[in-house]
Length: 47
Picture (spheres, rainbow, N blue to C red):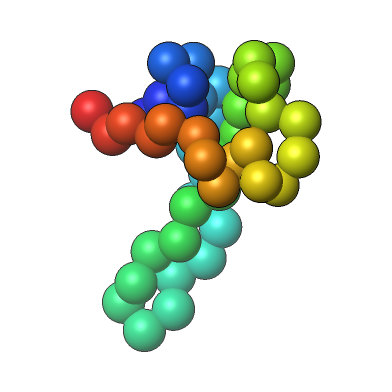
């Protein structure tokens, strides 16, 4: 996964509920991300 072409630093599984897995993606130094609105508009890619 990447956000604005920056790869995720770490992925942690945080919980499994009713057979569904939930993950927390940790990223640092993503350029152009300063506010929650920037996150909503970010280009997210899965590979």
